[in-house]
Length: 358
Ligand SMILES: C=C1C[C@]23C[C@@]1(O)CC[C@H]2[C@@]12CC[C@H](O)[C@@](C)(C(=O)O1)[C@H]2[C@@H]3C(=O)O
Ligand SMILES: O=C(O)CCC(=O)C(=O)O
Ligand SMILES: [Fe+2]
Image 1 (tube, rainbow, N blue to C red):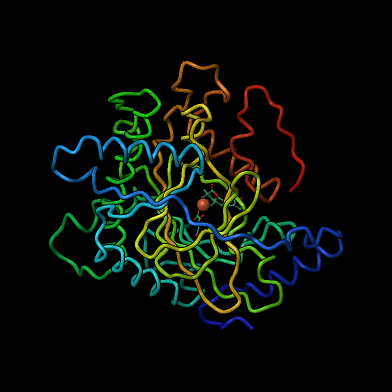
Image 2 (cartoon, helix red, strand yellow):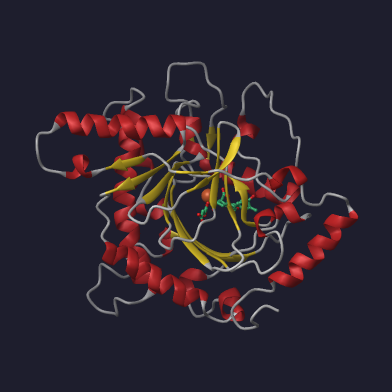
C-alpha cells in the first residue's frame, strides 16, 4: 500500500494499467531484459572559464570539450562549475520537505501560489504500462518566482521559493555561458541570440521524486519514461547517489554512473534544431529502484514562447522553423494523443521518420 499521506496512488494507477496492458498483449518487452552497461559521462572541468588569468589555451580546450561532448554524447558532467554546495544543498533540503507533504496538499497546492498547477504524478494520459512514470514532480515556470525572494531583505531564507530562486540565478548564468560557447563553436561568434531570447523568467525548473518501486522487475518500470527535453539545454542536479538515469548512446541504452561532484548537462531539442542536428538531444529515461527513493532537479534553459527556432548554419535545413510556443503545443497534443512525446521528428523537413512504437 502507498503510505496514504505522502505518495500519490501509484499502486492503483499501476494495477489498472497493468490489467489493460495485459489485455492488449502489449506487456513488458522481453528484449528489455538485457543487462545495461554502466558508463562514465565525459567530465569537463569548467574552472578555466571562470579563472581570471590569461590561460587562453586551457579556456579554448575547455570550450572544445563542451562542443565535442554535445556532438558525440548530448550529455556530459561538469565539475568546478561555480555553483556553491550551499546553494545546491539548500535546495535539496527544501525539495525533500515539500515532497513529504500530504498528497492532497501537493495536488491542490493552495498553500503555495507559485505551485498552482505545477504538480504532476504518474502519467494521466498513459494507455499502457510503458507510458507510465513512477514519479511525481513540480514543473515550475520560473517567471512565477524570479525576483520574488532574493531581491528583498525580508523573509526567511530557508523557504523553497528562496532556494529555488537562488539556484535558478546561478543555473541561468551557467546555462548562458554554455549556450554561448556552443554557439561560438558552430561559427556563431558573439551571438546575442541566447542573451536576447532566454531570460531567467523564460526558464523552467522541474523537481522530481522517484519513490522506490517495491515490486518485481523494477528495471522494467520507468521512473520517468524515455524522452528528450523540450529546451535548449538542461542542468540536472543529481545529488543523491541513487542510480537510475539512462541514455541512448550509439543506439544502445547505457546507465549513467553517478558523479557526486558534478552537475549533469544535456542538450535539448531546441539546440538540436538550432544547430541543424550538430548537437544531439538524446533520449533518456529513469529506471526505478526497489529500495531507495531518488530525487533530482532539472533546470530547463528555454526561450520566450514567441522565439523562432531556425537553423543557424549555412547548411540545408533538417527541420522547418518553428516557434517555441508551437513546439510546446505539439508536445502537449502528442502526449494527449499518443501518451508520449514525439518531439523533433514532427518538424523534419523531409519526413523519413515513421512511428513504430507507442
Ligand atoms: C508524458 C510526458 C510528459 C513529458 C513528455 C512525456 O512524454 C515524457 C516526459 C515529460 C517531459 C520531461 C522533461 C520536460 O519536463 C518535458 C516538458 C519534456 O519534454 O518531456 C516533459 C513533458 C511534459 O511534462 O509535458
Ligand atoms: O531524474 C533524472 O535523472 C532525469 C530527470 C529528467 O530527465 C527530466 O526531468 O527531464
Ligand atoms: Fe529529461
